[in-house]
Image (cartoon, rainbow, N blue to C red; front, side, top):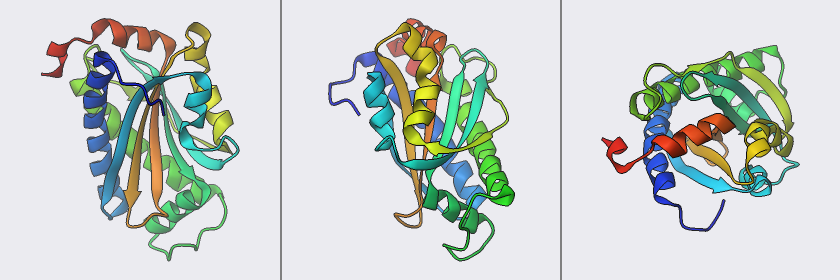
Length: 208
């Protein structure tokens, strides 16, 4: 991610989105029956190439569940797993030894989509409570499973912002459960219009 010092509005966004991440982590833990720790939350304004590189090399194959977000602030919410981490998630849910699941069949995809639905709803509920301008509900659409290179995934998610700005807003949270092999990322990509809304409404008093 970018090494420049964040501006005050980005710092305030970081604090607010951390609240959503904490709620998502708790929901993740209940769903898996394992402790899921919040590793790091990042909110940054970056160029397109840097945003695409945020998840690692663009040719990394990932499994992801993409949800449209509707409401006062819209965009996309992505739950992203490297292949093995995603299949390990399925093993945890099915109470099977890690390494049992080896491909993304319908059962595995269904488990990933249900996880995204639970974690995404918890995340958005917390944002709707704390984020200025999101009074009322932020509603996720049905999760769509995607299996592709991470570079292509993020380029598609960011294209709405990229139409209007060279500097993009990317919000990422990384989670870990039980071992280094079990890491996932939740990425919120506001629409271009929502980025403008956030820049207009944030002020120090909004942190109350």
